[in-house]
Every structure is written in C-alpha cells, then in structure tokens.
Length: 399
Image (cartoon, rainbow, N blue to C red; front, side, top):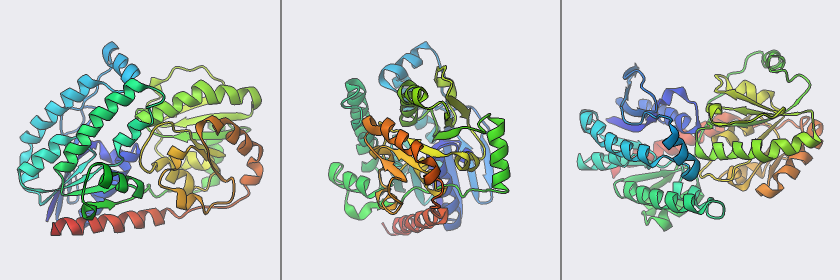
C-alpha cells in the first residue's frame, strides 16, 4: 500500500512542533507503507524534490510568504494575513491538481492540519481514504482571544470553525493530540467516536555527548557563566509563541530585572526578527541546531502561553530534561497526569496573573530544585506515539 502525506514544510527541518510531528509520522509511515510521497507547501522557494529511501518529498508552490506594510498591518491587527490565506487556498487547489498523480497512486491520504482544505476535498473526489491530523483544534485556540481581542476572536473563530468543519466532513478518520480535543471534536463537530483517534505528540530523541563540557562552553560563549537562565523555546513565527514572547519582553522580563539582576531570559527559536526590544536581561538565540544543549543549559524553563491548543512540544522537551517549569494552564494542557507525578512546586501551573510571583518563588528555590533529579525517558513519548499511530493506520485499511 502507498500513502500520500500533504502538509506545510519543510518537514525535515524539524524547526517547530508541527514539523517534528509530521517528520515522525513520515518515518512511521515509511515503515508501514511501500512508498510515501510527502507533498509540502513551504514558506520559501526551496528544492523541489528530495528522496529518502522509500519517501519522496515534493515541494509545491503557493505558500511563499512576503513581508510588506500591508501584511505587517494585518498581522498586527488580526494576527494573520487574510490576503495570503486566500492566495494559498487558490494555489493549493492548482498545485494539488498539477500533482494529482501522487494522490491518485496513494491508497491513503493523510492531511496535516485543517488549513489545507483543498487536500481533503481533492482526495475525496479521487475516492481516497483520508486521515485528517488536526495537530490542535484551532477553534479552541481562538477562544483564548475572547476577553483580550474581540476582533481576533471573531475572525479566527469564524474562519477556523468553517475550515475545521469542512475538512472533517471530507475525512474518514480524524486524529487529535489529547483526550480533551477528542471530546471537543465529537461534541462540537459531530464526528463519530469510532473514527476519532488520539495520537499524542512526541519529541526528537536528544543527542548529548560530553554534555557538561559542551554546556559549560556554551554558557561562556553566551556570557552567561554567572547567570540564572530562564528559557522559552518555540517557533516565534507561530501565533501562540509570538504572543508569549510579547508577554516576556513586555511585562515579565522588565519586572524581574527590577528584582533580580542575575537572571537572563533566553528565547530560543526562529523568528527573532519580529521583535523590537532593548532589555539587558533578554537574549534571542534564533534557530538552534541542537535544542537539547540549550534546554540542558537552562536553570528554569517557562511557557507563559496566553493562547494555544493541543499538547505543547516545548513542554515535552522541558520534561524530558528534568527542568523546573513555570507554565500556564494552557501550556500544561494534556499533560496533567504526567505533571502530577513530579515533586511539589517542581512544575508550577498558574494563571498568567500569578506567573511573575510563581517565577520569583521558583528562582528563590532554584538551588534546592536543581538538586532534585527527575527526568522522563523520551522513549515513552515515542512509543506511545508509535502505538497510537499504528492503530490509525490499521483502522484506515478497514474503513
């Protein structure tokens, strides 16, 4: 049997949680199916075809992003560019039509996210079995804007509700990342329980060699030898991460600076160009090749998310490295059973208006917390991901 996976890209970059998840899906599919074709819509014009064993990555056009006064205005006011979204919907239909032979030759089509409705519609027109991997229910994310930015809440709810209903209608199986989202999909979108599967996120297995020496060298390189490092990890071009960074540089870091001159906020991930700041206690690293080293170097990891949905890959990264964490309820979503097994106050889950106080308390106890050796084997997340995904693949053959 053959599979066609349709997603944004480039997947092999693994530069954010979305790409890490799709990359692992591609790897598992390559073990399950004879051939796998991944049709990707990258944000930049890059190499068109790339082959890896029985997997072929084909880059399509239509999602290339540009930055100008108008797009920047839209993103600032309503958090997304409607003109780009409209252009992409048109181009995705045209590009998928152009490459329809890959969809026609597949037995199963898996669509990564609800923002590529052309993929679901096209696959069903070609009478293919379609798996929709939601990555997160976007309508739930939009709800977090209701009390803060009513226009954003209205537009995103309207837009995403339509897309999610449409893509689920044109899918045989719907995959979610948590039980909370599974219940939401069944009740809100009236999808049959029997075709909604939970496949939790996983992480890249860390590769750490001579870690203590390398971390010490990295601290010295960044001028952080005598500092307490508070880290935030994420693709800053993604709405929820960008919003969290705005909170860090706009409120959290300035307040902490007044109390603690020994604390530095390390913001790790691509997209630092979006932010204007002049704070003595904030460092943007940009994209890093070895995230594990930066996470291991950190004293505290934070996730002050005000908006979001699904299980956050950054939280899995923090947990596997056994770092003290301060997060919001949105950041901890879907991980409550795991967090409950950690020592008291090692993982602080608080409302945003208590975030500063929780962080200061964690800072005051950092030496004690750093003596606690707690860590989760990342293999656990990977094995759960593989098992649940194989259930989806087996079910797809039967429906």
